Structures are given as structure tokens and as C-alpha cells.
Amino acid sequence: MSAIVSLVLLVAVLAFAMIRPRGLPEALVAVPAAGVVLLLGLVPPRLAVDRVLALLPTIGFLAAILLLSFLAGTEGVFTWLGDRVAVACRGRPRRLLALTFAAAAGTTAVLSLDATVVLLTPVVFATATRLRLRAKPHVYACTHLANSASTLLPVSNLTNLLAFSASGLSFAGFTALMALPWLVTIAIELAVFVRFFATDLTGRSDVPSPEPGPAPVFALVVLGLTLAGFAAGPLAGVEPAVVAAVAALVLAVRALARRTARPWRLVTEANPLLCLFVLGLAIVVEAVSEHLLGDVLRALLPDGEGLGELLLAALVAAVLANLVNNLPATLILVSALGPHPAAGVLLAVLLGVNIGPNATYLGSLATLLWRRVLAGAGVTPTLREFLRLGAWTVPVSLAGAVLALWCGLALV
Amino acid sequence: MKVTVWLAEGTWRACVDAVSTLGPELEITLLHVADDDVGDAMRFAYHGLLSRHGHDPADTVDPVAVPAERALLDDAKARLGRECAVRVRHGHVEREVVAACADADVLVCARDGERGHAGPKSLGHHTRFVVDHAPCAVLLVWPG
Image 1 (cartoon, chains in turn blue, yellow):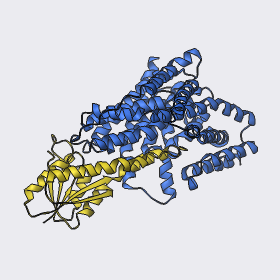
Image 2 (cartoon, rainbow over the protein chains, first blue to last red; image 1 turned 30 degrees about the vertical axis):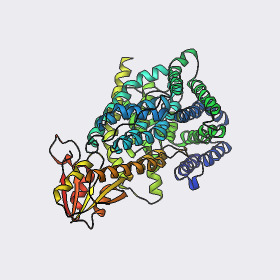
Image 3 (cartoon, rainbow over the protein chains, first blue to last red; image 1 turned 90 degrees about the vertical axis):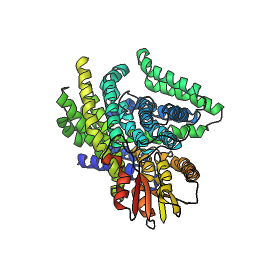
Image 4 (cartoon, rainbow over the protein chains, first blue to last red; image 1 turned 45 degrees about the vertical axis):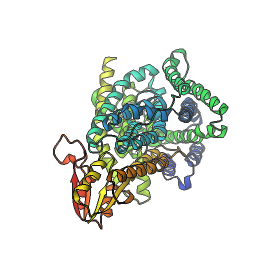
């Protein structure tokens, strides 16, 4: 009975999040569903409190990094990056693609995938269009790398953050193990893109590239210090959430002083409803894990760190991320893995939930497909092309990344 | 003779230049089709992020794409240097091009891709479809 109730609640939360009737926020169902879980005793209150307390730094980080990305955008960081890329590509589409890969991978790693999807992609589109080059390969590169290049740092993706505290790894340790898989993934994606879009990477720009405006020095320095703070902070006991919050605060004060943003805007950009949604979802997932999926996934997920076991862990994670969404998938898997999972297995799971969603296109990829299926809209030619591109990139890059992770683990 | 010239980024100049080989008495239409796929891709990626609202990146497409399209058509008209009509469409490029040359006698379009390699890869997905389905004669030119 508990299993059925938990599952119904999770399905309700996810279905509402995917369909979003009348654009209502996802938290509207997630938070009451979490309340029902607690009321029915599906999760002991003490466990729920522990879960929420454990998640708070992650949620705080999420709010801070969303705000930081937004403020970096208002300071002109992404426009400046687009202008630099436009000049550096010298009108050649292949060079533009390579530079877009670098910009998207870097943005995703430092400011997380949201920044790439919401802030960098429009700039890349504008850059290619103004250079009179076909924008499609470059825009698709951003959308793909927002997922697949989000494996490098614990801060690159909300999924990493959710798993990081359970991994028992330090910030530097996590990054060291994920660096090779990250590079391998990007290299494979680039190789596939160059072939897949060979006929779109054609001709040369026939218009002069725009004069780059002045560099947003202040924001760039803040971002550089933030990155340094992520790396060095943990050595001094300073959490990444604090580093991101301080950086966001500095840029927020500057934006308020220069009147480039209003206070209310800063609140909405930190997306408190998303934070509530994640907390509500985490509690509902805990119930599902406790009463239904936990045993199944525990039986399915390996606990050793052999190559086959890592591949299996990544595969299970990738499939789950495509079925639901990588956010709930990560919560379910982290919960199923328990408090002290093998670090290698956890990282393989992260490779699965981060790279895997590109298979059904930006995973949530699944969200979109489900939304269309539910709306009876079917699969459009655009979606068919995404699926074809995903079929080319995901299996190879996932296998390559896991292999790289396995090599890294062997070296440690 | 009614000639439709399909202008695509990267290869449009060769198409405009090829028109002069078709003779003097021509009714020329310059055609550009904006690809809806790009905006769709941006919107899909955005929807993939649960619970982020208010910044759909696809909303930024038109303000950039429309002036860029206008500039390309202006440059093409100037390069052609003779009387012509201009037509813009958007949607799935290949289908829009085929539909746009319903009343044309000739469609001028360019190969894409690397010119160093022979073979079917010199026709992109859209061009392949257009060559297969255009209801008129097709003049396929090498990009300059």
C-alpha cells in the first residue's frame, strides 16, 4: 500500500512538473505531496528533517549560482564571450564550432548547465547569425554540452551537487577523477558533430566580425575568484555554496548600486520556487526509494568498481534519466545507493545522468517528449534529428567517459 | 522564365552569380528560409530544465534572425544587380523551399559541405530533399 501511494505521489509530482498546466510552478504539487508523505508516515519525520538539512547547502548553492549567472549576464560576460568567439573564428564555421565547444564546456563547468542553456545559447545563435553562418551546429552544440560537459566540477550540475556530499570526495578529488571523462566526452561530441553537421559547416563568413566591446573586467575577475574559491575554499573549510553566495552578493550589490537590476528581480532570479520543488521532490523520492524502488535499484546497481560494473551503473542511470528526468533520477539513485556508496559507482551514475539525457535530447529531456506524447503532438522532424544525433553521441561518449573514469580510478 | 534562387548562409553568392548564366529575360525571385529547428532546439533545451521559468532563449531568435535575413537579402539584391522579387519563409527548410518553387520553372541552389570530397555528402539533408522533390528544373551550383 505504501509503495502504491508513494508511486502515485511521485507520478503526480513529475506529471505536473512536465505538463505545468497554465504555467503553474512545479512546487505547487511537489510541496503538498511531500506533506502527504510526512502525514502518512511514509518517511519518518526525523529522516525527512535529516534529508532536508543535508540538502540545504545544495539548494543554497543552486540559488546562488543561478543568481550569479544572471548577474554575469547583465554585466555582459556572455555577449563579450560571443564577440571574442566571433573574432577568433575568423569567419570559418569549423573554428566557430570548436570555439563554441570551448565556451559551452567552460560555461557549463563553472556556472552550471542553466547558464549555458539560458544565457550562452542565445549569444552563440546571435554570433553565428551575425557572421552569416548556419547557426544550427553551434546551437545544438550548446544544448548538448549543457548536459554532457556538466560532469567536471561538483558545481557544474545540480545532479553533481546532490551526489557530491554522498561521494565522500573532496572538491579537488571529484574534479580530478572527472577531468578525463569530461575531456573524453567533449572530444567525442566534437568528432561526432563535425561529421554529423559536415554539410552545415560550409562556406565562410562574408561579413566583417563585430568589434568586440570592452571586457566586463569586474565580472570576469569575480568569476575567476569564484572558480579559485571553489577549488581552494574546501581546504579552508569554506563550502562552495558560501563562495557562490559571496560572489553573487558582490555582483548583486554592484547591480543594485548601478540600477541595472531591481531587488525583486534578484529574488526571482535565485528561483526560490525551484529550491522548494527540489526539497519537495527529494522527500517524495525518499518515500518511493524506501517502499518501492530502493530494493530493485540496489539489486541492479553494482557495488564494485570494475569496468563492467561502472558501465552498468552508468547505463542504469542513463536509462532512468531518460525515463523521468535527470533531477529525480539522481535523487532516486543517490537514495538507493545509501549513505556510503563506492565513489566510482557514484561518479559512473553521474556520468549516466548527465550524459545520458542527450539520448532523448536534452533529457529532461524526457520531459519534452512526455509533454508532447501527453499532448498527442507526436515526433516532429526536429525531434527526429535530435534523436539521431543523440543516438550517435550518447552511447559512444558515455562508454568513453566511463572508460576514462575507470582508468582514473585505477591510477588513484 | 520564372527563376527562384534559394539563398542559404555560406553558399548564397554562388547561387546569385549563377543566375546570369540563365539569360536576360528572367522573372527572378530571391528566396530565404529561416530554419525553425534552431529556435525549437533552444526551446526544447530550456524546457528540459525543470522549474526554470521566464527566460525562454528561443524568444531571442527573431530579434536577431530577422535583421540578419534582411541584410542578406539586401546584399544578394545588390550582387544580382537586376530587377527581382524577394520572398522569405520559415519552417522546415526543405519543405518550405519545395513549396516556394511551386510556380517556378527553375530553382537555383548550391551544394553544401566540403568541396574537396566527391560523393553524396556534397548535398546536405535539406538540399538532398529539395533536389529530390522540387517540382521544377533544378540548377545545382558549386559554391564559390
